[in-house]
Length: 387
Ligand code: NAD
Ligand code: ZN
Ligand code: ZN
Image (tube, rainbow, N blue to C red; front, side, top):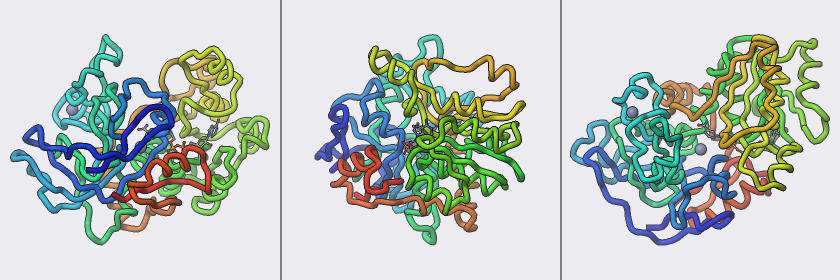
């Protein structure tokens, strides 16, 4: 089959690789009909995720038709149309029983599991996300092996198109978990840092939960303008404004917003620390957007962080966080538990995640898709690949 493989920093290629086969009795093989490129894939593409080997198959946002099912699979059968959550969870361990699927204790068993914090069990395995997360081949491919098929795959009705349901695999639940973690309710004010797909899904879900005022911060004019039109956000371009957090505090009577959402991650642009870290070639994170979140949030408010962080971050204003009595919530998304209610919301027309798609291309052109999404060329918001 054809699959998109990692070959080093900024080098991904579609290659012919062996077809996947059933390994465990509760595995399925899915014939992929649509797969998306995620901001998390960009961390890999930029060579920032340890444990990627040349030839590893990328992709964790995908859906398709069940081609073959192991003998112990009862949830789905051959021919079913399914969306696959990016987190692989057993459904039975301590954390799965708490609906904390991203912390599943049993699925991340590959050799790379030992690269995680040694004193603790590793987090759940993820599709296409390095040995660190289980070394499981991803879904930017014609076929993919899906473990734990009685837990993850979500059957979807024929009435909904691939475009409408594909983002249930990751970014829609991620945006939803971000706003739930942020405590958004009718009348809330929220500042969302990052006008990428995760920021967009956060804005859509914040609107669904009744948020009144949504600020969105980025330096990409076309991405901000899209969010203004689609979600009615108040855009702030951090290239034009010295200090977006101060702009938000001033606009809220000197108080700050109820919650901030950091939808950027550890490679946030534009901080002095980032330059220092790059110069010293230190592993670490700039955390610019995170510091802005702390500064923009009111006393007693919440900072919710779906953006991915690795290593340490410099200049964390812990004193400010303490002084304000802030709450922090963060982490990988517990996708499995959130998919059913979000599928219902899509069916009822309350959410239309597909509107953010800007580029569709065949899997064969995936390398071009990565380059456009990474370089934010051609007004790129989200790329969907069709094998
Ligand atoms: P993206 O790279 O397309 O978008 C990030 C946006 O942030 C860009 O538009 C960029 O211009 C903007 N940005 C950069 N620096 C900024 C700053 N200082 N302030 C404000 N905006 C800034 O990525 P995406 O697909 O939207 O993903 C966003 C983050 O969410 C990534 O870190 C990704 O890994 C993470 N993510 C986490 C989960 C999870 O389970 N928690 C799931 C999916 C994605
Ligand atoms: Zn993703
Ligand atoms: Zn589990």
